[in-house]
Length: 276
Image 1 (cartoon, one colour):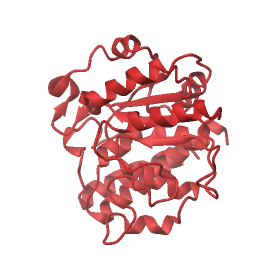
Image 2 (cartoon, helix red, strand yellow; image 1 turned 60 degrees about the vertical axis):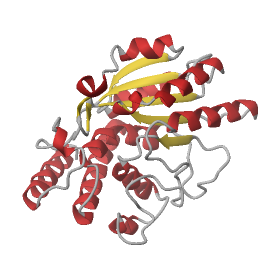
Image 3 (cartoon, rainbow, N blue to C red; image 1 turned 90 degrees about the vertical axis):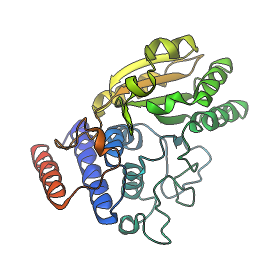
Image 4 (cartoon, rainbow, N blue to C red; image 1 turned 180 degrees about the vertical axis):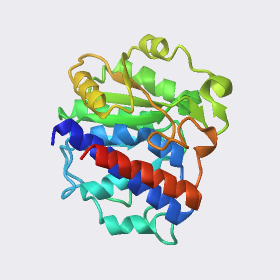
């Protein structure tokens, strides 16, 4: 099995896992988590320096999921990597569970509680600057939603990152162009997005955000950039991987019905067979 095939299979497995979590819990941001799954798989299985057996390893790369509501894919990846037992996924959104509807730093592998949009990049700037000052080779990765960019704090952080030449900071935009109340163009247009980030002093890379192989390639390209931070505009499809959910606004926060769940799991199982 090739490395690319392994990563593609893993992305399908994570989609099956997150869908099961949401269906059993009766709550979850389905479309958003399906959208960012390939980004997380590329990072956690192909790029980042991490050690699930030592989550607080000082030399680890840092990952901040500023887009905190899309947590189900994050929980599925952390469990699969061994940060906590997979059995715990069954407790998602249940009483007294650590696995709540947003990242929770009581869970090994989670650096920061997120969910109030617009804060992740600011904290990441602090982490990256601290690493520079301590002369550590830590890289900081931050995932944001395109709707999140309406928050002014994102752009304050963007200016700071460029000012301090934080080439150890890589931002990622899950650019699926849909948010809970409509398209990003209709709610608060952020075009031209590439030019905006360039004007704030960032190196900009655009990529198919649902192509794991291309994501790994551009992440490695970004790690070679010096003197400025990098933003990766990952063009994704909301609900990616399930035909009835793709580009459907109402799947932003949607629990599949019994029939929808059956259709979705069947499609994902067939995709796994194709990749065998």
